[in-house]
Length: 310
Image (cartoon, rainbow, N blue to C red; front, side, top):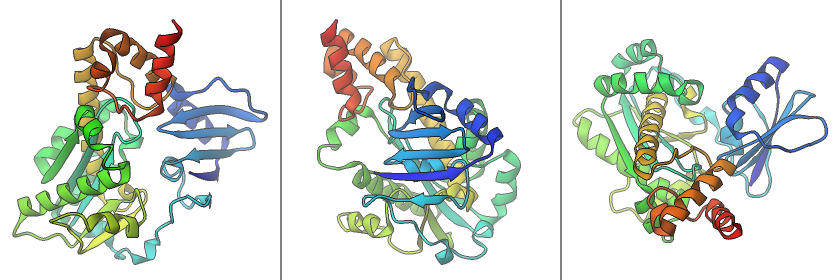
């Protein structure tokens, strides 16, 4: 677990509070304007303008709000990559970018997408409004995603909750994501051949050394021209486009699952997820819940306790 502290102006704090409105916690912390929890990360905004992010995704979550953040890592925090290793004109090059979504959400699939953005497509992608999906509304994402699919080659992989629960005891979350990123990139390279990207940018979710360690178990590992950086969508539109396609598919899958099970499946892993999981448990037990949720999350035990206390 790591923690990150950033300093923001008052208007930005208000923006944060609105963004995390659905994840707000009822906690009374001295000098705190609000406390929220999203995807396993606790966000505490203080009246002084300081915002503390704590949890496994602290650096990624903090990265939504400010560049050049001050990082205060614990012993288990992720090593920051040096952006000096990236090509100087990266944003203008023909690159493959890959990203994932769903890892921190109790309900819904884990999705990885790789996009090939040729330099000739970059201006068109920008005109579409392609940018970090976290800064777009769900409606924006639903509108932009189909246009991206028509404009650039992509490969999207979706691991349903049922499949996730089968794999998870053998593959931890990082290993699973490495396998999916590698597979999406490999399939996309085959799709665009004989064209070759000038590089491959992966939105960093683990240190490069760890990524490459897990790659060793893959029969067809892509190891060349790889670059890793957090907040990759800020460095190349290929990653931003991949992020949007991931999010669009995730929203669609949540919507489909909600219709199937007869209850709205929320994103994230907060208390609302506990309540919805308890409702599904009453309907069909763990077998039914496992079709829509990642059972190794703590939400499962919390939901079981809710059902047992009734």
